[in-house]
Length: 391
Image 1 (tube, one colour):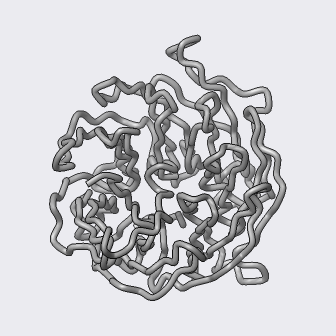
Image 2: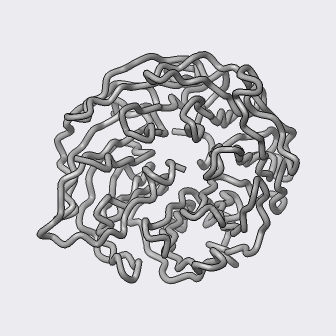
């Protein structure tokens, strides 16, 4: 539905590798975000069987919402924050953010409130380390007004307050079609919560801020001493993920289909490796998207869309964070926008947005390799997958 080619938090998106046997497998609930230009109604709460890898086709709950493309849990999973990726030409042209309360027993969702994101096509959100603020990335497909990072205070009850701070930077203009203006694609906090990293596809940079809401509640972000990391011209940075120990980070570059590897210390990212997902392949094969690590920190999974439509599996060097390719596997669909490892670590679920399916494949927890497909579930324009970590 979008004119463009398009981290869950590490807790929500990179779980797995626990190696549960079938005998000890459990049933978990799954939230599916989607685009609603077609038949989808919004957010779907589903049941997932971690013994068989099957999603029950009958939803437990359907939450009507316009373009709830990205889902962010609070740390205790008592609240859910959703970006409504609205913009010009859509049924609702106003970008918004919604907050939901989650019943601790049933996981049922109920709306707390909704506010404007003050930008077009908000595509990603994340909570600050202290859960006091939500960072929303307004991508903005059109050149005018361009993308912005919006900061929203969050109450202890999950209620969102209006935007208190916005940030934007000049575009690189390397690609005249896709980088004529800045396009903020995602924003996440450092593991210690002191810094915030905003990935701008249009600027070919990761912008770095210090986060100190106590010093200035109305302007909690200020440029860090090292205020930005420059990436290759025309690469289009998309999603950043920190290692569990906080010493390394990985970044997908959407337009060049690459993954940059960094050492990390005190607000500074130092690049140590650049990995090509589609080296020597045509531009149509280059559309890197999601990345998630296994819970044991041994493997990194990355999706590449375009005409490639693959998931790549990498071994992670525990000392350096550098990557070694192990496998390339077809997603058996089109446009794998997001994916998630189930809490048992035995399956990986892929949201194939343009082929309208969620594909479930087996995963070997010891080798990290992906196996056979166990389910293809029809779902209109799925965009995000988040598991409840407790039943």
